[in-house]
Length: 180
Image (cartoon, rainbow, N blue to C red; front, side, top):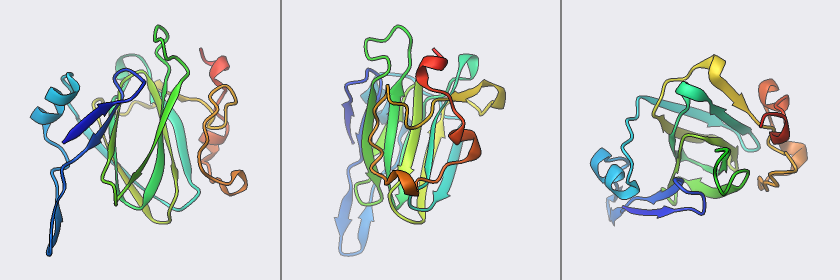
């Protein structure tokens, strides 16, 4: 497993070692001991989530705050997404900066998004399956977010603006200036 920290402290790209032969391929998706040693943090994942989305679906930018904050380990089982993490830790040198990466079935990369970050993804292929582990349980009252196209964030979602599909909740999220 190769682990690389992004320019956002605590946010890591994880690339598993893939073994291939004439039968197909094999890789270890997650190993608690190896993961914690590589990132230098103790993380206890307690919930797994999965979504299936069509091309053009954008989910985010979301997070939970306070005692219900969540770290996430995100991967794509089928298809392709542009996955985005935004640092909103108030005392961070990279507050308001984002990191984006293409996650796909073909590259098997994963993104570890620490607590204190907004997270979202744009689906780049039909029938994309995204799976992610969380280190805290979902708590509706602690959830909040920022609108995906906030000009202060300047995220290029790699989608045609006209074709973006959003939930009603995501369509009505505030700008980053209005929550911090």
